[in-house]
Length: 351
Ligand code: ADP
Ligand code: MG
Image: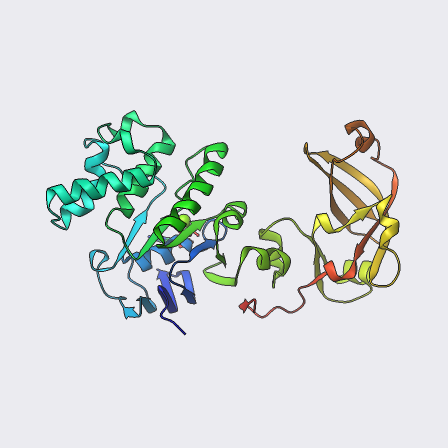
């Protein structure tokens, strides 16, 4: 196996009696766009701060490119961090902000200028070097923070919810830009977010965090198609969980199962999902949620549970969709789309 860009072994951190990070093992490969995804308080920032050296672990090891850096201070690690609040110096112009790290490293002035200009070009702010941070938009400020973190070419860039302060449209645009930038510079990115859509959009692989532990590490497609725990199935995308009596009544099996809303079909297509390898069930449309390009149908099955069904609005009118409220309906799905989540071990890595 090649040397990992970042390797965490049994990494833990407690604050008093709060266990923020609980014995995490993780390998992040060189050149990966790796995301840590999880709800607020699940330990993502604490892990990032331990990689950066801002936080001393209570236990375990941090390796960067094979070197044990666990007790090294931040400046002696070949990583930079981009924070959500940018942390730019307000009294310096943009170029001076970007040069800052190089000045600390005593890089000669002419070389500093050149590298800072190149970093600003890379984030498409070439012409704005003499502006003050206050004269920039939120998106531009975030780009300056990125340029400043990239200017001395760290081996690893750590990003803690860097797009969190941006509005949705800009955020989406920046997600694509950031991914593109990462490809260009070839630096390993470790990206923290609580937004599953963001993680799916940008990442080569994702670690899903819950209560200071990692539930699953996988590619976006694997996480979505083959979640290994009910928590991952619920946190990444929407899913219908069937467990206990509901599972027995609908699937005829005991255990815990998940079916994605887009894998369930409604009349008139439901008829196609009868026969071997398929399951059909009868129910009533309890509600229809109009979402523009798609609708969510909440179907109360005769067998008990309510499932969410997603249908694209390819044909027919909004009125037609809405008029299905209260109507009886058949649903059907291919059995191969039922994900078995029974008795998950705590940490499973998708092969
Ligand atoms: P996330 O980034 O996933 O939201 P954090 O790593 O910030 O989660 O926090 C994980 C847990 O550790 C939370 O319960 C948080 O309250 C706690 N925590 C984080 N930093 C500190 C600190 N400096 N002192 C005490 N508790 C902390
Ligand atoms: Mg955080």
